[in-house]
Amino acid sequence: MRRDQERWTVEIEEAVLGHNAGFAQQNREQFERIGLLAVNIVSSPGSGKTALLERTLTDLQDRQRIGVIVGDLQTDNDAQRLRGKSAPVVQITTGGYCHLEAQMVARAAEKLPLDELDLLFIENVGNLVCPASYDLGERVRVVLLSVTEGEDKPLKYPVIFQGAHIALVTKMDLAEAVGLDAEALRRNIRQVAPQARLLELSARTGVGMDAWYAYLEAARVSAPSHP
Ligand code: MG
Ligand code: ZN
Image 1 (cartoon, rainbow, N blue to C red):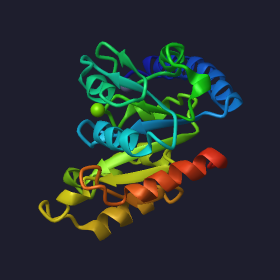
Image 2: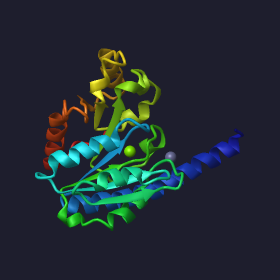
Image 3: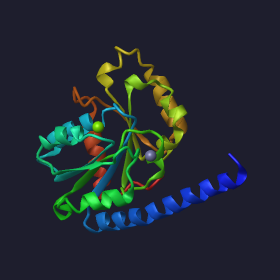
Image 4: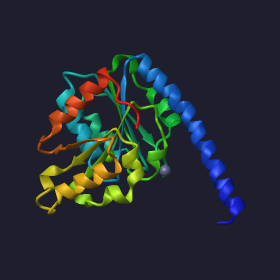
């Protein structure tokens, strides 16, 4: 890339992120004002974001009032899966756009009864790169990594882990089948993201889910500091 092109690219990026930051701040203020815990869920495609939400909505439905915003490139399959639960679900179809931005969340949130909710889950587009750069106004950012993805993922995509408050290792029921080196995976996450809480769970069997619920409960009461 030529030098002037490079500078132009940087300026565009800064303008886009600055625009996003303004909307993120508005979202954050709105969520905080009404005491709503907003959780931004990021991971690569297929790490189990929707499965985590399905289980969480079922298990917490009597304890928390939950709303969901689901971002997807093309389909509303995930939203359909979640609509079987009692929580209101709003779909954002990004039309190929590879991450959610704060303004999209603001628009989607207008369709939810925010005042009546305790918890808002935002399922981001499956992508380990640019969602790291876009604050949505959430209080908690959670990154998922399934045991099928390889122990070195955190080393390859450190930024998304560095921006997370909590890392969930998912699909632990498959750990033995895929020959997971759990110690190496933990070490790699801790190396790139020492600030993040680390939990291991399986939405299918329910193992480890209680610790996730306890984390959410605690985060509602006292905000974790942003990394
Ligand atoms: Mg999904
Ligand atoms: Zn993107």
